[in-house]
Image (cartoon, rainbow, N blue to C red; front, top):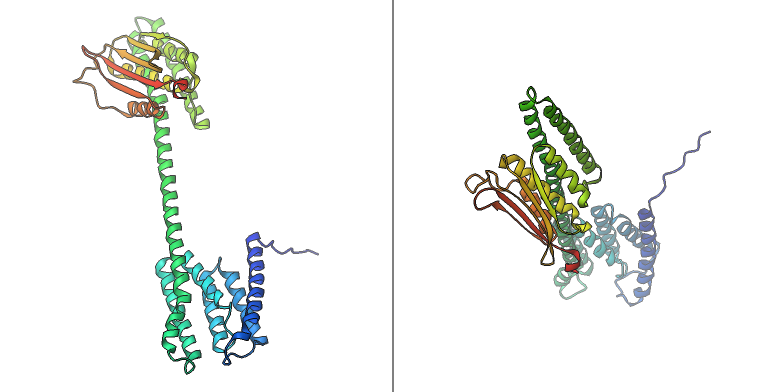
Length: 373
């Protein structure tokens, strides 16, 4: 025999049931407490009246989260039926207040205004029928009675507008964060793949030129193509796996310079002092992008890399005397833009542009961590 176990009731549902029971008990107790002060037109609270009170409270509190319009409809029918039966006034009116507030909070303004407007009209009509002939100005009393609907709707609508604004702000933040992450990833791919492909292009060209007359040089160039492509592929894999494909320190720079020299670009490098670990990744990318620009745009030349400390900051410079003149230098591309972003994130400054007399210069200054503290 198979035993079918019932589904476990969610915690929020259990809380709603508990709150509905406690609220129903409070409404009944409150109504009994104030019934002695009611007018003679009110009839004593009997079993039917208690049933209506409990039903109104249970429907309102039980459905207010999952079905606010249903909670409002039930509250309007039960509360108005209770009042038309001439039972005593009392806390039962809180059912309308709670239901109206939840509808205004959860529904659109148009839908909540329509539903609550209908509820206000029915409530006013109910009071008008009940007090007709018993008050000097029943119409005015019925109009004032609608405040039980208008005020909680106004508060609920304000909460709805506030929550909607927060959701829009959160969605905008998520969208901006996602866009910034895509831009960052694009910059990472450009830094890694762009530099690697620039070296591969140069080395392949050397191999083609020397293939027949200098087979040893062609072999060395093809080996460099293999090593460069393998290194770029490893960096790309590391970026996709950890989002931090950063080389660091002098070891990473030494490997970078060796690959560039193997590709046929002479590089002179001067490093004055140690590179702080928090700045090592940015220094590596600045040098990498600077040398990539030399490989792609400068033609036959010598690149010079200078790294040192100046004015409480770390200074990085990549220069050449190639053909990158003011007349031929293109506007900054993705590489320079990404490099500038990296430097500015560390509160630094980047300069990139042609040099007097020919060539190109990339220079970055980043405050040292101890200087910022």
